Image (tube, rainbow, N blue to C red; front, side, top):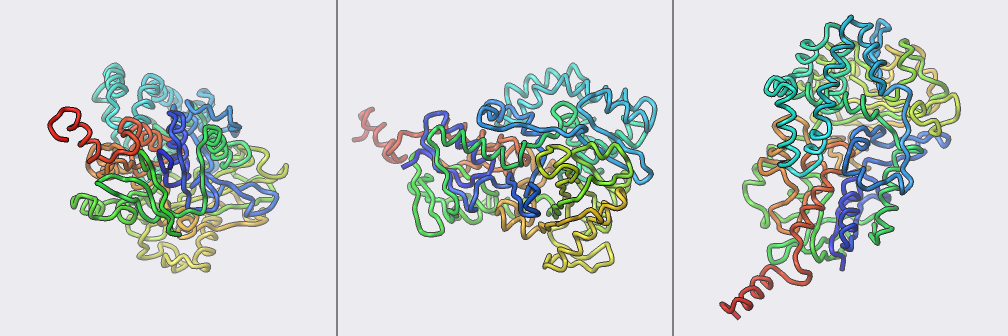
Length: 539
């Protein structure tokens, strides 16, 4: 019998398993898919000569994460690779904002839009440098982050106090208007905010866009050398060296609760896998509380809270094998690993408004990944392994374009939407489509089939909006990984601090389990009886 069973071999589940194994626990990880990794996997499914990241591709949060740093994954084969530029946001007129790990390069790019905007970027970067260590410690530790939070409050006082707090809570459109005269700086912030489901007019989108931009400024948007699955492989090697086991093709259908405590899990084929000390669930919040745990073990209020749980937007992704480099009209974009495609702030707002109206956008905002530019081993010299994703509404009520898309995402609709994505790329890179050797379409149902946590293609485990963060994540409460069932811990991105590959939800769940560990072999009732025997009040 293992001390702990972990449901799901995504990055959070594997981080949790590693930390428990470090503490001397025996750990068994059960994964539904035929291979581990969750949304951190690569393959050669587009073309045999091209390595393609199936889901995520760039990892600024992983590079910044103190959780992953402490695991020393470089000692287990992980190596990061960087593109010459971190990110580019070209415009239709040929201008291009560039984010680079060299601060002078970023500043010069923004000065080309408006004199003085480089200095404004340096000021925002100076705030980041003063807050960075305490901010990251607070972000990646269990909520509430008492020690890091106290240090951060002291730093905030010195950096402007309430005025700075106001700045970070601003909508990103307003933050850009207050800080920059030209479009370049505004677009770098806004494009990064739209990596999540935050519109330019959403409260807090300014702080999120600033955080992502500053992560890129300091750490870049690195890619694991050889493919995203190299990160998963390093976590697996480390875990197995410590005696942990991972079994794939094992779908968990039930958390077994006895005596009011989680004592194991049951799989789809009827196997019961016991857990001596804890069960950790790297699964979505609705799956855990709506499917895996019987309602009789949960408070009635939780069901009502789950009715209000909000997913982040659906995702539509296209992978390509290209015969050459992307012919960007803006030359600087050829050296960027990530390229944001929207022709100005108003086009970003228009895109998000269409999603809010449950329409398929006619000019989708695109996050475009040039993986060979970031990691030259991904495809033959002179070619490019590329991908792009955009967001969609879950419940499609109409098509803002002229294709009549309904959101069924059958084969025909997938191909039409992929064509729309390619036409958007063509606006900024004329001749792009002539380079396509092969493509693969990953619509929302496909993404969910490949990873059940990606409900309808939602990749962040729930909305990034303020009403479902901190003490409101995943539902109003403490913002912690403990669940209403003793011995059961939430270890997925549904828990604080949310989505992204950084390992914090898994680490927080593991630490909570270690704090709450119970003597093996004793139920709660048995421990109570043992205590009473010792005090002489009850035999």
